[in-house]
Amino acid sequence: MNRRRFPADYIAVKREYLTGDPVTSEMEPEYLMVQPGDTVKFIAADPGHNAATIAGMIPGDGRKFVGKINEEIEVILTDAGIWGIKCSPHYTMGMVMLIQVGDTPANEADLPDNLPDAARQRMLDILERRDAES
Image 1: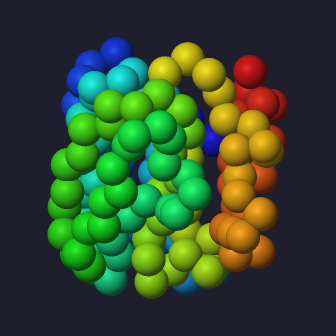
Image 2: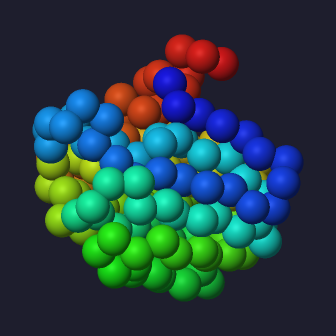
């Protein structure tokens, strides 16, 4: 599983098709653990992707962000909680990731009911892999 905890305040996330197949497109790492105030950089590894927050998965007073297609963006995640991130064009195909800001891990209750089926399943798979490694 692509799960990482970084002590630094600068983290890079790649958005790419790992196999060239849109069905298996993913962000790497798929589960990221950071602390409040850390900066996350979303790297455009392959064309045709972006990074954006998922409605209902922005904790506290966190601010939504939407990167442009093929744009590398940096965001400072100030609010603790679970952030849901998507590639907007491939969201319904399950191109998502979870960012744990702070020390409380994500669980199924953090997932909104209105997620597209593939995105929900992908997030459940991410949580299952994370738990299997713990």
